[in-house]
Length: 80
Image (cartoon, rainbow, N blue to C red; front, side, top):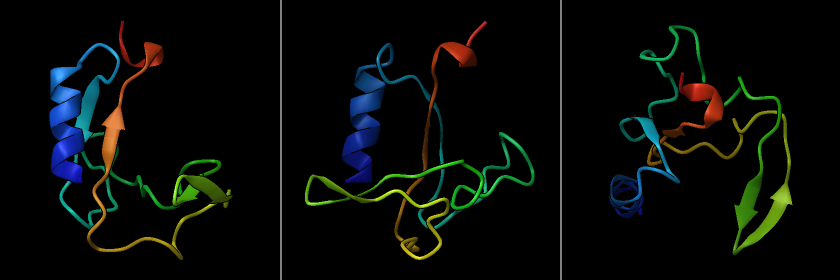
């Protein structure tokens, strides 16, 4: 599904401004900061299953898999 989401972002750059895409399983975001870990550095995560939120943990170490792809989307804070 990552390739399909990437294509969606590329075709819709205004609502989904893509800042970075990382290889499957890569938890680090070196182009954004050398010590960033996508699994632990956000204050809260939402874990979805079958269209429903099933938990809101403070890290996603227990659900991370090596086939997951990280997409970094911009927002109003990302642009000058």
